[in-house]
Picture 1 (tube, helix red, strand yellow):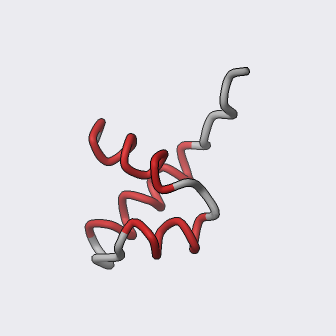
Picture 2 (cartoon, rainbow, N blue to C red):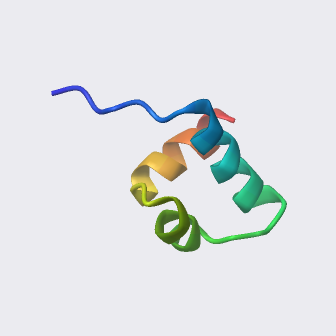
Length: 46
């Protein structure tokens, strides 16, 4: 089963929290309610 895609707004929020606010992946996971593996994947692609 294919995973549901994230909106561009959510992806931008993940990147903003990581690079501007210096959040950890765990903090981003709790804030955006998405899996750490998904966060890692988008950070690698960015």
